[in-house]
Amino acid sequence: MYSARKTTRFAGLVFASLAVALAASSPAYGQLDPGGPIVDEQTTVSTVTTDTSTCSLTRIGTQLVHCDSLTGAGVVAPSWVPER
Image (cartoon, rainbow, N blue to C red; front, side, top):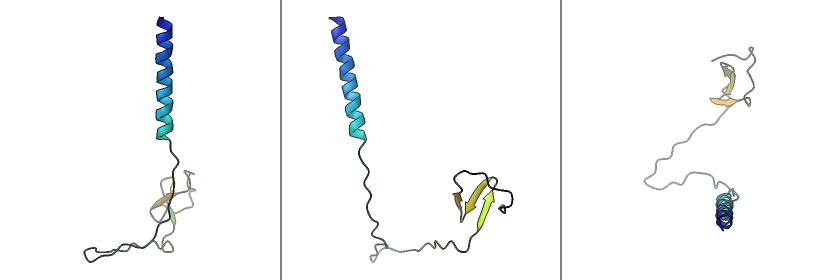
């Protein structure tokens, strides 16, 4: 009788764990960005320039940096790249 109760508890635990895991893992859906800010009378809109033609590739230590963004996928920067 004791082993039947233990098996039932174990089966319940496995079922509950699977139910939680399946409920928590749902597919992710993307949506298009409609673009542009929403402007009304009380909102001040500021623009951020993303022009990357004025900045060049540099390095900080061994990391490659382009326009204040780390780049290079973790590859060690060569010594010929200018350092900041």
